[in-house]
Length: 161
Image (cartoon, rainbow, N blue to C red):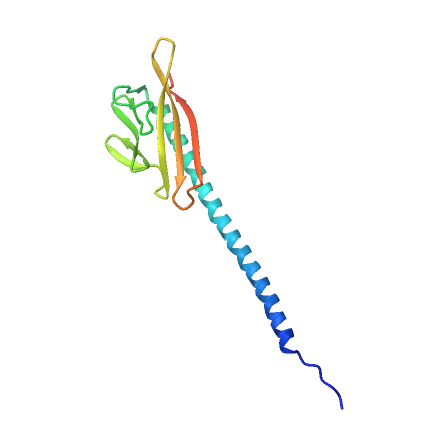
């Protein structure tokens, strides 16, 4: 009589336990990678928004002929910048934690609705005679999805003379 070897109940339970641990490790790794990808997408969105803001401001400064110091708000985290070019007016301001740009009375948000801008600060750049020739801009972007993703950026823009 030939004896057949079968899997015992203990061996089956050991196999299931090993499979369960391996499955748990794989799922945890997949979730970690997914979270990392989402965080990376948010960081990329912040970088795109910063680049867009600075390109937009550079273009506006190239068209502008003067900074209206009377209606601009400097050295404030809720700053307002008013530029003029002949009869055209350009205004940057923070509204509901988004950057709003006004051109001839038409308001448009130029920052993403998925990001919050918690600081938009304008600091005057003056010559030794006190004439206003440019602006230093400081902006802070944060994400609702990942509150630890915070990016503070600064740049300076000068009027073309």
